[in-house]
Image 1 (cartoon, rainbow, N blue to C red):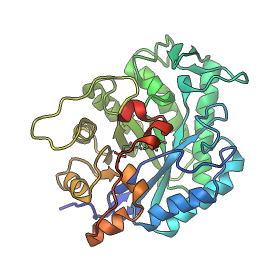
Image 2: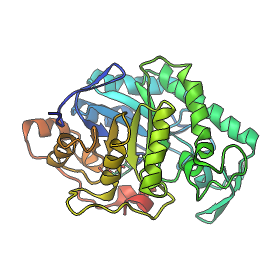
Image 3: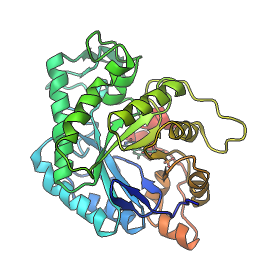
Image 4: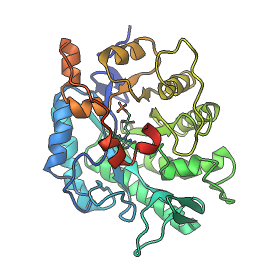
Length: 346
Ligand SMILES: Cc1cc2nc3c(=O)[nH]c(=O)nc-3n(C[C@H](O)[C@H](O)[C@H](O)COP(=O)(O)O)c2cc1C
């Protein structure tokens, strides 16, 4: 039977257990221009050393105009490659596999006199009126994604995770609520997924067979049925790993059967797992090794992501193995609020 400590072979990568460190940004500050610093090496190195099987490095910007705060990591320039190389090597040194999460904020970009705020369609978010991007801008952003993937590849990452959840650009494209485009990139679901499909097909020809293409999505997009449909289409376009979280644009939450022991996000992931062949990561309030192990044993998902509890105790995995007491996060929330995750987590 599979358990939390079982290995998983993904595209030739032996992932030593089913514990994933999900992307969590802004925990290391004092960096400028998107560059990795020693703080990142210490932060990720400690979790890799603590036994995590797969680390997904925090939301990393693919474009200099799309930055939540000054200290957000970047992959928009070749200048980022040496730091990213050190970061991937630090995780590998302790036997963890590592993906880089790629993000563009789209309509959530900060208003700035140096650039316009735009997304798939005109949209008013946080009192900032975003305009619809032109087709030329859309293609420029696709290029920026492709270049960012290639930089992660060059830096020695085992793959990337496209951030398509929590309301950022890829989520804006897939969402029928935000995406009102009348051209080939809006309308039907296939059209709304064209932006990412074209990026993936360009990347596939440029990286090796073993490079992992992950995608973080909302299960409620806007309903679970449509989330499942999106997952199936992502698999068909070549996504190797699905990380199921929540949408930034849907208040709908799947109804959980009475005998389901976990929350709606995990439930959504478990339903997506039943409809795809690629591995699925579930996340949110999993917290303890007992719960994580049960999820894997029951086959609800292939991987369990442990977020805030890994921030508090980098040795979570080793302690789980030795059945030692783990120091848990007390959910005091400042990290959630500062990270901008309040909308999907509180
Ligand atoms: C401080 C902080 C930063 C986060 N940053 C990101 C991020 O960069 N990308 C992302 O997809 N999710 C981000 N998240 C969400 C986490 O990946 C995860 O989904 C969330 O913490 C729920 O898991 P947990 O209950 O185990 O903490 C962040 C969460 C926190 C607390």
